[in-house]
Length: 112
Image 1 (cartoon, helix red, strand yellow):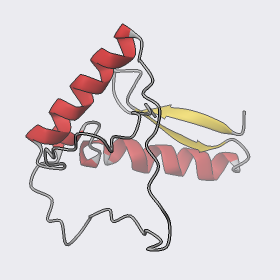
Image 2 (cartoon, rainbow, N blue to C red):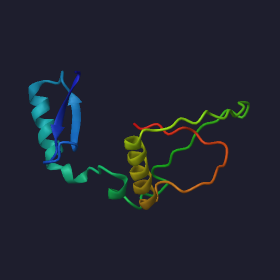
Image 3 (cartoon, rainbow, N blue to C red):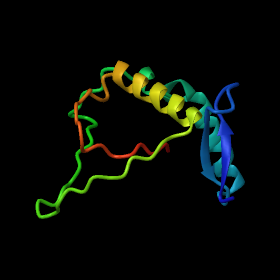
């Protein structure tokens, strides 16, 4: 493992990874700074609504010469399906994504 997790609060899922090879003094200073500013972190999209798209907006760079290919549909496990639905709901509520209708050209969902 090349990193250590600094917990920011009581929820173990709310932690920040820092390099394991950092000098101890730097680790302590970084940990103190992170904990002091823990309220600045957003852990879900719903915690940061209203971000101006001019500040953060993702655009795909597409090669106009490339031809589109339909991917074979892959099923998700029920657990992954529920996680996907929850993530999409949070992103829709925060206005981070918009609903679009594509009948054929859907990509498979990849949980990260």
